Length: 78
Image (cartoon, rainbow, N blue to C red; front, side, top):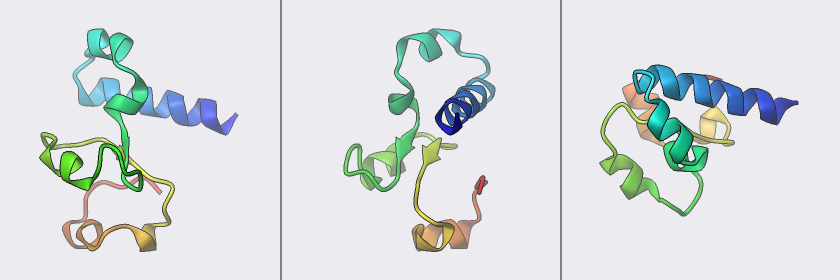
């Protein structure tokens, strides 16, 4: 059940973030729209090159996220 709730939340946030871009939401896989910060692909450099604001997810505890997260204070859902 948690997975379904997480997926649902990611889809809702993506649609709000993209101003209801249903074309991309239905043609581009969720993993292409949301990257895991701890995964090798696409990588931190690729994520940094994404236009801001970015949608990034993580299974890391807040304390283990990069220092920039603590310094810049982005929106984080814990």
